[in-house]
Length: 452
Image (cartoon, rainbow, N blue to C red; front, top):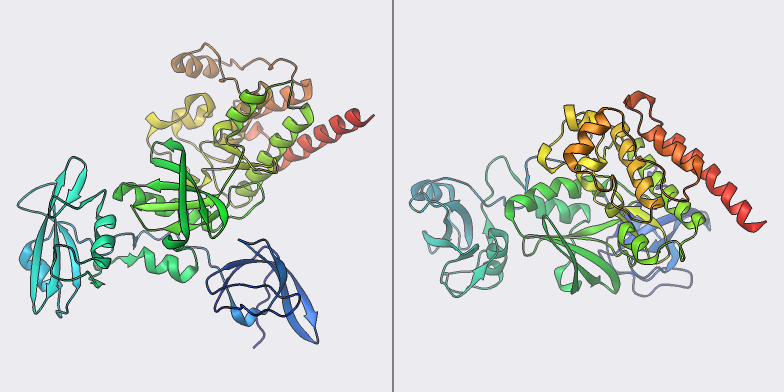
């Protein structure tokens, strides 16, 4: 049976250690991630040239010692808390924890104390029920050890007996659910907490804090989502991110189940595009650089377009700049192929296309509208769009045909592209592929003018 060959860009997980490499081979440990660069023939055998994702070392690897890192399927039955059984009674919990074995456990909602939980653990042929009190946004059994969420609590008592009779050893999985931890581990996306060092807080969003950190010697950004419910929702975001790989998208490195959920991505040293432009301004950043950022974003969006994914929140604040000055689209994990919007109150009005605001019709063409606004932000060096207008005025006036004027010193051809992005009829707006061609031509023109 001939083995499937891996195209360049494929990510692979090492099945065992290779710590005594021969010349030209890569050193790696079991579980390390490597990216395939190409296939070579060596003494009649197929061998891959690859790059170690953490060390950056390039060399030869043998396919037999690797497995492909699979994308994670978006699966509604995947659960970060497969041991959570919801509203069941004490006797039902006892029936569920069968056949009894020490350390078999589940968590249920407390029927007697709404808002609280019960940890049910099998030990010495009986089931013990521990009342988990919800107090001041934290959970506790003994009022000395406090937890942010159930994931945190289960993780703690799996390692430490504490006040309970035995450590938690085996989750009783609720029927119809699958363990996300197991699936993440199988596909190579579950990272090792002990190899993560958290540094300073570099931002906070609606869902939790973002930290700078280090994972196995590599600088990373870590989004921490503490709420159980939100963490579960972000599992879908993570699943989407595992399928996507492009130079102009912020790369997901993996997730850690701790304190809720840690989503670990590449670290973007220069922060978001808005702050980057505002803090440097026209005297530092050239038109060629601005055009390059616009083109980078366009390429990332063209890739999402090719995957039939809609971003929904494309704005300069969601574009990050790397150490080597590459602009990358972030927060695309909330992208969806489904064109029905979520909660309308959360829509960024100044960036959202009229058909998406009014009829919840999201599409690549509504992303193109947002990209026009992003271009305006970029060429105005980080100004807030629709200056001095309230959200209500923006919504009404755009509907009546108002469009923003060209930013100061913006090339007229670029402003013409913005206007194309803001066509009222979505069908009249260009694709990202077309936009890329036009921006590339603009960049070439400006580079030639600079050189001459």
